[in-house]
Length: 252
Image (cartoon, rainbow, N blue to C red; front, side):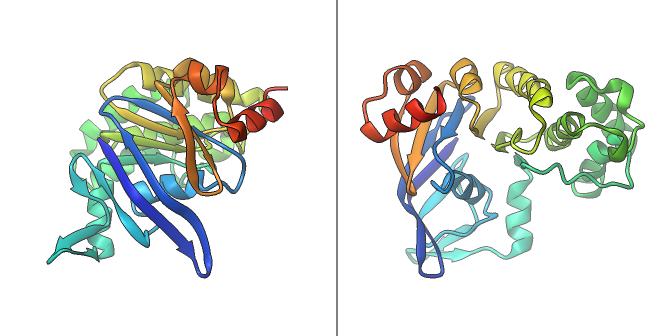
């Protein structure tokens, strides 16, 4: 479903991704771990072209992301074309970014109507179904200011799912939450990953979540994929000394 080939990324004179290769199968759940500044979030953002790339290519479901090929060269898409591509790729960020003047249900149902032209009543019905799935049916008419951080993040997950994406990307979705609210968001993500049929990539510092939910764990450091394998392999018996050092620090 996701095919990342030889991706380099530069910010000015600083290179942050170095020839990254990563493939994610349809329906697979992959957790990307690693120290801060290792390029995890940057890599995730290239998958839906929120960040451009300087070399290599990224395809989702067989289609180049952010670029078209012409005469053997890649040409960047116009922003409107890139936005159309993003319709099939949901993303949940560290910050919730809900519309403060809209209720939870309005936040969830707005984009399907505005962007995809769905029937408003059908979008609201599906939005309520999604809010029920994330445990917030009783908060459908609440505004973000009346919701806890964990509840807002669950609304953000429902909002991303409302576009019926093939791929869901999570960029450290619990990092901005108070510790006691982390569990409720992780529970929703576990349910999403286990239902199957959707491809999930999560950048996370939650090792317990990665161990329990991931089909594969990818360890990144200094802009490179250092090691990958099953949770038991990478988290339980890592072979690379850099992975071993990182896990010995975070799992103490």
